[in-house]
Amino acid sequence: MDEAGITDAYARTTLVDGLRLNGKTTSGYEVLRAWREAGLLVDAYGYNAVIRGFCSEKKLQEAESVLQDMRNLGVPRDTYSYSNLICGYCEIGDILKAFSIHKDMVSDGVKSNCFIASVMLQCLCKMGLTAEVVDYFQWFKDSGMFLDEVSYNIVIDACCKLGEMQEAEDLLDEMKGKRMVPDAIHYTCLINGYCRQQELQSALDILKEMKDLGVKADIITYNILLGEMYKHGYAGAANDLFEFMEAQGLKANNDTYCAIIKGLCKGGMIKEAREFFNSLEEKCVITCSAMVNGYCEADHTQEAHRLFVSLLSKYGILVSKRACLNLLDKLCMEGNMNAALEAFEKMWGLGLTLDEIAYSKLIAALCRYGNTKKARAVFDILLSSGFTLDAQTYTTIMNGYCKENCLREATDLFNDMKEKGIRPDVVTYTVLIKGALEENRENLSLKKRKANLKTCNSFSLSEGTEGKVLDACALQSEVNIMDIRHDVVYYTVLIDGHCKMNNLQDAVRLFEEMMDRGITPDAIAYTALVSGYCRRGDVDSAVRLVDEMTSKGIMADTPTISALLDGYEIVEARKVKLRPDKQERTQ
Image 1 (tube, rainbow, N blue to C red):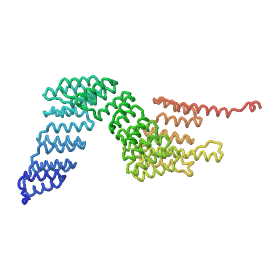
Image 2 (spheres, rainbow, N blue to C red; image 1 turned 120 degrees about the horizontal axis):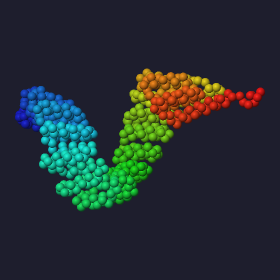
Image 3 (cartoon, rainbow, N blue to C red; image 1 turned 180 degrees about the vertical axis):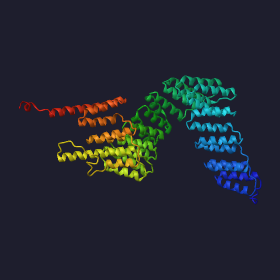
Image 4 (cartoon, one colour; image 1 turned 30 degrees about the vertical axis):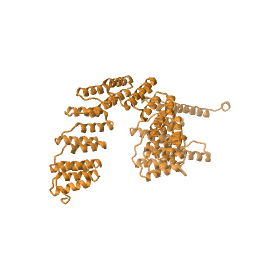
């Protein structure tokens, strides 16, 4: 270093900063420590450069270590030493750590400032902790810190998001009292806040105040107002405002067009929105996405899908991810599965990947509408592309297979799930047990027909399982071994299964076990057992159970009443069967 002429502290710290700027902060810190061990002076600037470098590289623990070194070596810390770390933690959303560093800074006798306060307030805002923004703004103010226009803008915006418009206006007046000059950003926050509260006139009053004070509104201000005015049906006034905006030298941009389309659609003026969209000479992702979203929000899903396909074929435009999510979600909700699959295939083919939630909804909808085969195809595509699918998605496919009596496929998927280390939950086992019970009943029914049985006997869950694919008893054992928490649906499936196999005693035992576990039976669980009693002709027990049910505030629904009526019919039929006919009585 001496040969290079690096002999003074300034030159040394400049070298460290240069290494930082070139992404070599670790090397810079190693050089700094080597100088320190050699007894050469390194000032706070050199350490701050290393802290800043580590923070920009997201190596926050290393940055903290440097700060600790400064403490241990008695190197004076200043605002920059701490602010870089605070900003770093705010950037990754760790606001608790940021406040912890801030506390250390104050304890160290280093004075905080409005820049640090603004960074922390903005972090709270981004995390959705809007009320906390207001609280901490007051905390900073009470500490005697000077807060600038940026800090006020953040807290005014927070008040507007909370709907506290009077507090927001009071803060604006407070700024003026401190000789600060609010700009278009501060006023636009208020306008946006009033629009959120559906107070369009108050928003327009703020615009007038801006004009009177000579504060020039920007394009964002006009975009907010135009969208709101079209939404409320004030098309004429909105057109006038649009012309006034252009007269002020502001040119409409894609965000303006987006606001207009969105406002028209929200106001129910779909035809006008379509005409406006079609009138645009150049279409882009922003405006196209707005139109697709507008159609979806207005429940014009087929038009949204047609536009989606048309945009791809005519212009090669793929709408935004959010618009794709909205479209796919609406198509699935409405059961238009052919269109949903087409949209999925086009998105996938163009490399647009959505999140697991969206794909899970698609798979669930396909299964719900009886197309498990295609659901499995989507499932396999996702797996082969590296997506990690959860137990819920696996269970959805298994449920579809069980409903379609494809128990072998359900079993294979269940085994695959466990091999991948995905833990089944109570819903998974409930679905499979229900499928197993259905299989058992079908096997028993076939067995009885073949044997020409004329009496109704009692069977256990293990009977009728010859050639079975799923074993209900084995699945129950797994649930207990894995200590999976039972729920009311799990018990209801078992109770219903026992009742339908004329195993009423075990059904009653399970019902009592469910209540002993603190699980409150619902109307469906009660109805399953009521049906079991009625199937046996024990209407008195069924009626007592219905009375118990209603005493607990659970109203008997149509299936419960139907089960009771069926029970009475069974009893009457048996009476007729047992009554001697007229010829027998006369003999």
